[in-house]
Image (tube, rainbow, N blue to C red; front, top):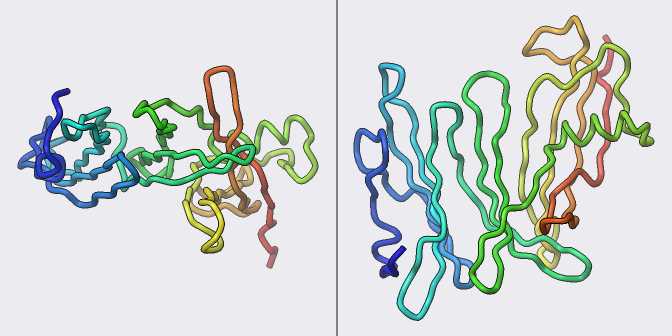
Amino acid sequence: SPAVAIEAVVRSVDAPGAVAPLKVNYAEQQGKWMLTYHTGKARMFGGDYFHSRVAIHYETTDGYILQAQWYSGVLACLEKPRFFTALHQGRYIQMLWVPGLVYGTGSLRKDALFHLTEKGQLQPVAFEPAPVGYERLSKAKTPGAILHAGEGVWKGERNVIHRPTIDSQDQMSFTFYIWNADDGNANPTAGRVDGTYKLAENENGFKLEIDTFKRTDVEKP
């Protein structure tokens, strides 16, 4: 992509399927990286639906170069992205979180994470959603990771990035629920799990996986 001025990065843009140019909803700069989030409407299924675009640029001596962009699709919409910093073996790792919510009532997610290198590279980070990690730990009989017979995780998790104290690194936490076999779709009665993720390494770079967790059983009447 050719280098462009910052005014071109934060303007409204045309997008596939959009009924009008998508407007800048949010923009954030961190170091040489510039993140923009454009929102609007798209014509799908005979009506107008929420449409969004996430773009990430890197600043060079010639201007900002588009490194990657993503659009909402027919299966999921892109929510507000975030920069965040993860601590790994004493190093602060600059990250990009692109959250995606699958359409429907399942609260299922299509989140993507990337490592932003100091050389301007965008490297994918493997991501194990909390419910998947919890089920893995339960099968391995990890203490505290409990799934009783007849219990299951039917829907997705809620992920949040926050900074516990002003002097700490960012932290990505999660919440999800556990259903009994005879529960209604909207009323899980087995329990709730809260916890945090951690950054680890794999053969391709980094991965984000479940770290701390605590199950709270639903109180019986």
